[in-house]
Length: 296
Image (tube, rainbow, N blue to C red; front, side):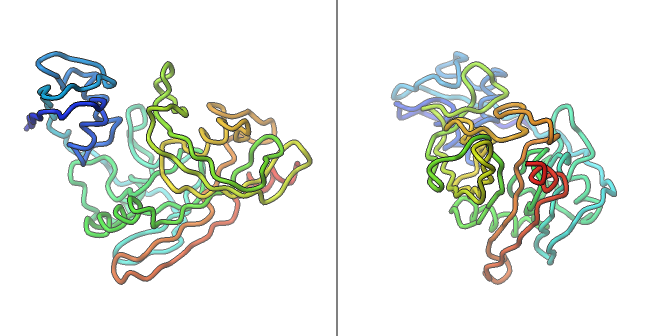
């Protein structure tokens, strides 16, 4: 059954950003879709997500009833690095999508997890157990919760920036300085809506990095640590400072020696929900990325 909510805005804020604070369970991109679908009105009129609210404006939101879950378990082989009664740490191969989405309804990590953990709580979502995401062509460590309590505790750690998420990335050019912080807000690209970009109206995003190895002046192997978790953050940030990710056909540069983006989630650290003990896991570069480095 659909839900209806009404708010009286204090003013001075973008509509989508205001609603992301009022509707804490929904992502900003989800809210933007609701606005585009006409499910949100301001004083009875449909407006754009960037509409700046004035004091006292009435915002009405219709939240459609969630579609029933139609997820099916699939016996997809997984490399399990760690498992207990609360969670899994999976070393995801490149090419495996994390969760179902329009145009990709099956053959995902979620389908594989359901086969391994048939009691996983669905709660009407297409992303059961998913605490954070990796791009389809990014390999490496990803955290999956087995129950709602664990998912809530792990999500709180991520929100509090208490989870270590470290990546190995190959970028074009001799990255200088050798270490630093990229602090630049990321949001939807103003004209290419399927892409992200560094934009002044975006959400805060910070990436710490240090160069691991230079390959002459052509490439730099970089260790990147996310302080925030924005969509495509590593790829967007390095492209924005002039050192695009190798193999990234959207934000970076194609490479004849590599069939996908050189981004690997190499280290993951967090506290176990059951006891609070800090644990840390590592993943070596997969074969295709090792072969790419060998060619350099």
